[in-house]
Image: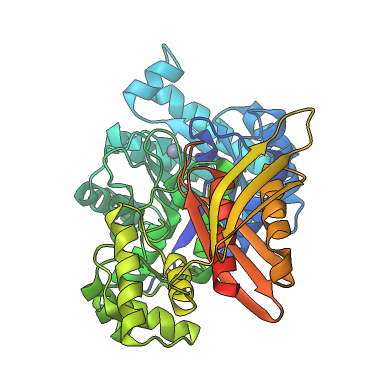
Length: 493
Ligand SMILES: [Zn+2]
């Protein structure tokens, strides 16, 4: 039964994850994340440290009262007051840690010896049990401690009726071989579930967690997106996927919920997921290069170990310099469009042009390009000769435009709620004699962060029952908007 073992997942996004520099979650935000984690299927949610602050206390209280399926846990030290706070907050359990390395013993309890730590631990475990808490007893900095001492400490905690034990790699110095060996020893000595808690200082948190489980641990601690102090903790999503895909272990995690949960944590903590992060990073299921994409269209397993749908995502095709006909044809097939050879050449040329400028070309860009090329009118009937916009605090935003339409110059001015609105209104006025032209939708995206970002505007413009999609991309939002609208008008007029 070594394989196919059911592994329990202890999520500490709201405790260790919240200790990420700069992260501070409100009670409401913590409740949102806890609810998502519960749906994701984690077995335990460490919701905070009850004694640490009023916010943490209230979070644990709210989350405990939310009727979630998961066990709700508070972090605590081997101190009676920590236990009192956890119990009063209504937590089901306490993850109680005792310093186990000499470095930690000397810094936390100066003048105390290893024996004193054992005595204090026994007292704390007994007291927590009296207060009705499930006790997960952890050895902090275990990976730098003497294993013989940890065994003694765990024995004492077990005699005091601890329910589970945790081996914490507090500073991320464990290596996989040692993780497996230590867990083999501990799990053959103790009859209760042993958990592993890993940090990622050397990028080994996932590997160490997996090897500890191979060695006999039955539970692991992790955070969504691997957030946490310093280099963070073992990332829940990648540990679960590796465990199930490579090692045949089972967890209760609903894998299709992984991506949504990850994005929620990113949004609320504001810790941006690195683009190349396994499973949840933007590029984890994104393909560039023509050869890759044409192979992927035929059989996704050629360049994907798992499908994006497994973790609740969709595949992204990024074209660009390596854009091949196959990827463009696939997008056209999905959209139900057909192009002749000439149009195909033009589409390919435009896609490559954007790619050559170093900009990432996504499915959405290609869609816009295809739609533009398929409806294009080569000679531009509407040309922009001039535009100026005035805007400020005590002034009505006003724009004036000079257009050349079929060779005739037309000058118009209009006001608006903002400068973009004013410019759009001026153009609409200038073309009003060409039919009932409407701006159906307007969408703006900043391509990169920063006020100097390239702004991408996508508009839908209609004339009668004909609707076209057009696009403008400039660093100036007004110019991008004007460009998009004019492109649309050129398709309609
Ligand atoms: Zn930790």
